[in-house]
Image (cartoon, rainbow, N blue to C red; front, side, top):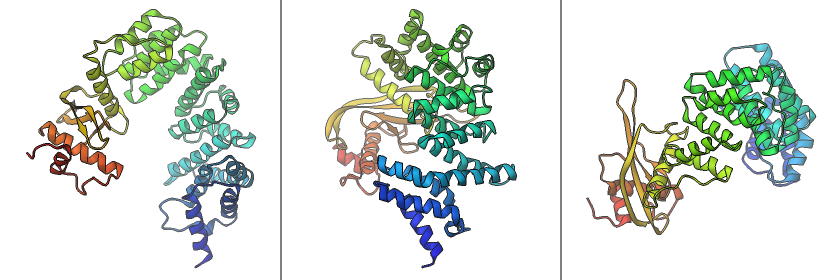
Length: 418
């Protein structure tokens, strides 16, 4: 076995296991230091994932305080130098093939710096925002949220350093979110956007008509309770085309005692499309949702659950254009080994210039939609059968058939063969 292969295999090993002790961390640190001195030992032209990414990933592996402290002491200095060298290469090369990939690697290191903190790592984050490094990179949100989650004082230092001038692009949005968290959860009263330039930027976010940027306006709405004069922004936010922005603004107004805003949130709590978010806001405010007739509540809750799942970015990313109950019943559900209420919802998404996309999703156990399998031309019993087998397969249950078929699912549920 060659020395190069041995080094690569050792990196692969420590990248795949937890660092549970100081000795584990010491072994990982030795690899980081060796990589700094001899990167060629870890590199192969056929690599899909760069060894640098695996080296950085080692800093995610500690599962104990002693391991993290050891890795920080013995390996972080090498990571700082590796980052500096790669940043110089990135800046010298300029836009070319691999430019964005190199920037992503650097942002990954900044996340590690946010987790481990300290004078030099925090300064690297500040300097990277000033360059700016990948100003439209969404990884900035991960970097700054990791920072505020790790330590309030470190996050405050970065927020203060970046307040004047504010960074460009998406970095500013990530900074706004971090500042909002500092104000909401840690009582920090100095908001970096409560300046003439900051307010100008907030205004532009609220006025942006691009739906891809509505999340920026949502971040502005979340900042409203923490600005010295936010009346203009309240007006813009409460009239925003995105309901999520309007709801966030209503929460901010209700937080200040606005009875009309409370009433708006309560109205939203009666709509399945907005119920989940409205109840979250009202609960935070210590206010009850609007009363709903007891017989209607289960349907409302179930439909709201289905809509929330469909809205996930990994699914459709928005509420359906149409949704209705396809079936409801109480039955014994094999995956959970109990009797429960289950629902099927038929949904439709209109596609401009194309055929609408339709499907059926289930609520009652694991909320899910089997795209392409559970369709509205199937009877409800067949859809329940497919979901039953799918859920057992997901759990690795020994009762799960090897193949997901309607027939096997119907047997499990005790339905007559169709």
